Image (cartoon, rainbow, N blue to C red; front, side):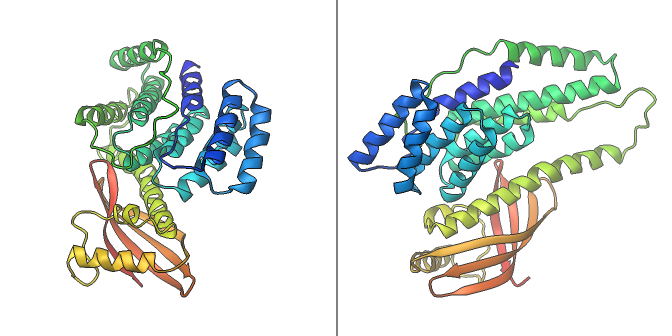
Length: 347
């Protein structure tokens, strides 16, 4: 299918500097490995990158290139492991999320692909590649929805026309543009144009309008139940992914990224001013030499399309403190992103 092949090709082109500097010797080694990848010498490139990572196990560029090599060797499961670990260790980078989406789309897991692309856009709202990929994922999901509609009602002319338009669009997609190998992900992303986000939302809205087969009962409660099920599966996973990224930023002691997960109207625990609360959090997160935060037994409850509550067991460890506690985060979705609006410990 052209859709999958197009997507796999785009993955190979996404070799970024990742906004990390490296000593000249390390940079030269990565450039040599990159050159082997471009020449198609994947076995040799994998051997070299494994040697490199043995000396620099946390290096993001080396790990990113390894994921690309594994994907080129059709080792999708291994590539997914690499990019998933990279997104946990460096939740601020958009490229690993994007490439996870590419791999999930190649497997036909379009809902998972959508979730990863939304995380990519969350970290870098001006990341054009992720927006384009998200549009294609929505297109595929819409195609599947229209196919389903026609299974129930083969005479549905509107669904036939829409499906035909989508298939024409998918078959006429031009070859992907190569991303610049030297283009780093911006550390200060700007807000994307509203039109692109609106188009993506419109695609999902259309795909949800599936008519029942002739003679099928038109229950007033059926549509809300189906909508709630779709919302529970998609947005519930998005809430959990957001919380895992929040915990990862905390564990990595990347304070500014950690604070960015909190909504503008966040209700501070003791009612103190936001500035005072942020100053205290910066001090507490930066002071320890090491922090590990684990999210165990999470449970997400959606209160609506833009409100959710997640309960979990928070396991915190640092060089001077160990603590396990029940945690509740009240989440709110704004402009397609989930934020923490309130948090409670021991609830």
